[in-house]
Length: 345
Image 1 (cartoon, rainbow, N blue to C red):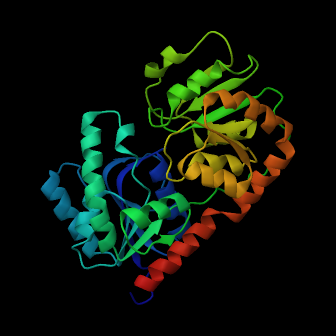
Image 2 (cartoon, rainbow, N blue to C red):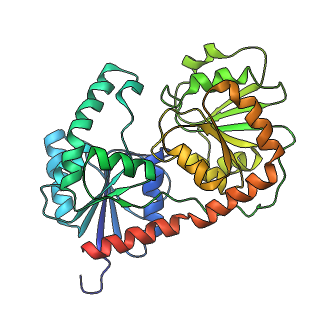
């Protein structure tokens, strides 16, 4: 390389603005672009914001075979390949004679998938991923939950590099909002427990607001709304600036998701000093136990009492949330990735 920056190829199934895995890739670019020449290769790219990386839309004007050959040619021009899961890109990276790292974000259980086609795709993925994980030069887990899953699923030595939190908000000292607001951020889907979340609004006092932010069709869940209890606001996709304001105005981040490999909205809320009220499942449980910055529910009828506890314990939970975010930054995350990449190049 003779003084030039090494060339890093990041492969991800879909690079879509606002999507969780894509946000991790964006953080990777922002924290490593001063050390690497970065290319992002993806089957689908829907991205309009400035980004300091070359974008390679693999399937744009190409059939599957041509896209695979194009990716192989791209890999040859790079020094190291980083796959964020993605079955096809891992298959090609496995035969390309380059060091390749796989970051495992996990696979949602088949029973939580909405269509038979998605369930079939999930079954194929569950069969193929362990083989590819074992062939990777290095395998990384984004959370303790995923690490434990990989130990049993892939039976390969795994490096734990947890996802990070954004920089702590400048508005670090604030009181609990006078009008309680529960903020949900994420995909609008069955897997995320939207039915339970909307049903829980009927159990809450009328001065509470449940705000839903994210991509998806809310109409299929509207039938679970009632005329009594908390009001519900659906905002769809919002800008980063708007989302930051929503985090700072919320009493807590809430999630009834049945499966989360990490739980980015939880730690994003922590960076704004906002506690979390989440289902006692998957890695969300780890985040709450590690941070002491929120409450866990098993059934939605527990939510009203736990919300009252969050309001009563606001100062302590607020402080714990900020402490967690300060000690789990994206800078730390990608410093670990940088050391890993350098050892392989």
